[in-house]
Length: 376
Image (cartoon, rainbow, N blue to C red; front, side, top):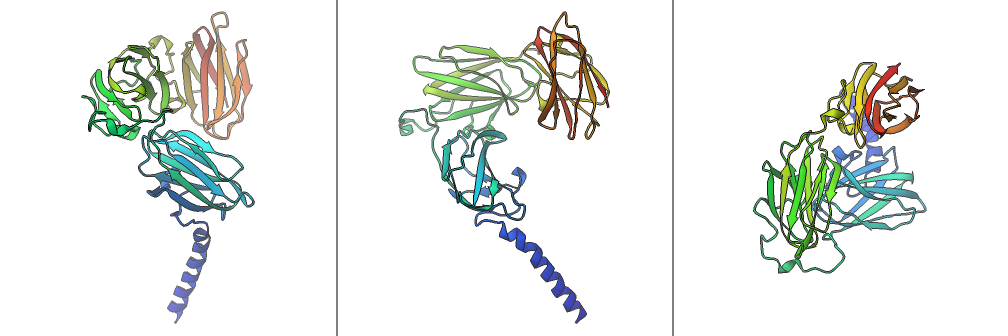
């Protein structure tokens, strides 16, 4: 009898614990889905959810089969009960949002990679519906993709499908030959370009088509080739892995991409830098309280300071003001909390750092050496 009583009591407590979780879960949700890593996989075109109850303030979904398209997404909720917003991601890139206070709220989004939806409550709590209407990439006029022969949108160096970053063709050669159609993307990942400054050239028949290229270092856009003349060339800083997105802006046709690997600018590297450190994602980790760098115009240096969380350090920036004007920003996590932008050197201030401390240094004018000193 005692065993039965204990078991019954445990089941009652378990049921009571599950009630709040079940109460905050909509018909198409599988909780927990409070982060991108726990996103619910959705293969339908309608999502019914509920948010704002029992500290459930975020719902994440991953939409199957939207890569390379521009879906039209509609968010519906009761404006008398709540204000619900939605963010749309292509892989890890935020491509747009629905943040109007009116319902329904809708827009069309360019989704090159895997489509993630982040639903969050701005105010109140309530139920919501999301409607997804798939669509081809719209260039502004009617097209009939049915006239193309099977395989016509696949060039000699392509392995279709390569319409999204996730399906990018891996290229270890220095020449790529492809075929671009007006409602289709070609993605490539170039092997061995990390830390270099490749010269990229695209060639095509400009009487038949206008083909553009977007260049990415990891998930950061490094630049693009969008001229209307062929060939079109440019140099791109590549601290991370190099991705190319090729697409036909007008018409369709063959293209050739040539890659010339070039060394980065070693003169823009100071004694305590490990290039490339041009973005927050590849910031140099610094344990010392003094470090030296070199800043060039058009180039950024990022550092992450170890052990400054929860402190209030005084940060001093020194440089030769007869040679250059160097500025500095201080971040706590991703939040900008202050800067040193005076034209005189040394420049110093005290900053409160509740989170991880990042330092962003750049040359406002000319170039030169600098020293950063941290006093905890």
